[in-house]
Length: 300
Image (tube, rainbow, N blue to C red):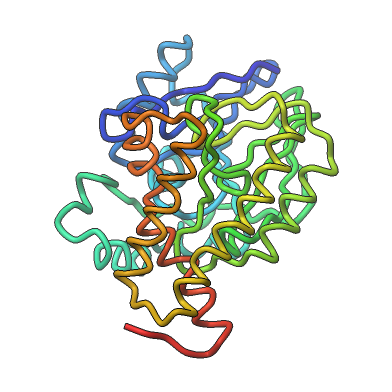
């Protein structure tokens, strides 16, 4: 098995979103399609590795957030089988609700950010249950149900490596700062920690993060990420408990995360890249929504 990282150069910035092309003997698999806006970069990356897109018949998406699977419909329309979580399938087949929700958030920037989002033919979408495996050539790909970031999230395991989607966080250019992926509306720190602990117990030799790339010190990374989940949940809760509105919570969280990043030696240029890939404002909203739901109240 050969694993190739394809940099999708999201918004022209290197090292933010990865797709992974897996050579499984005579067959190919793709893990993560990225958004439609990066489709050309993905196709070019596949061809640069000596393959034609038509040769890819198996596509695995970790979840339906547009930076991970926005282009999945295109691949399904070309005849590839798209594998996903049970809670993701209906949104891949009919993305209308997903598009509507995203357009409310991103407004005029929607098309520039995410590009075309095409429906996947239902017969080209296959749901995988927890621990269900698919054999692709010489490799076996096993889906792990890993909630916490989203309830429609799979990590994919091949041998002693794991493709983590967002469940192992955001770590750009192997920096010491790990950002917690916490987009609304399904952030749940308790489930998140359980998922991270499950990955840690497996003692993987390597992790492959969608944001971004290979991590060789898997256990250390996962232990650090578990701690970070607790830190960001507590940070936003402190703002919420003070009675801060959403705007104040976003500002407070951004300041706290920027300080945490700076303590690791992260440059301002890299901080900008992190904000592009995993906005602190978006994450503050996602974490805050968890506390609002838990306490049965909200503040504007």
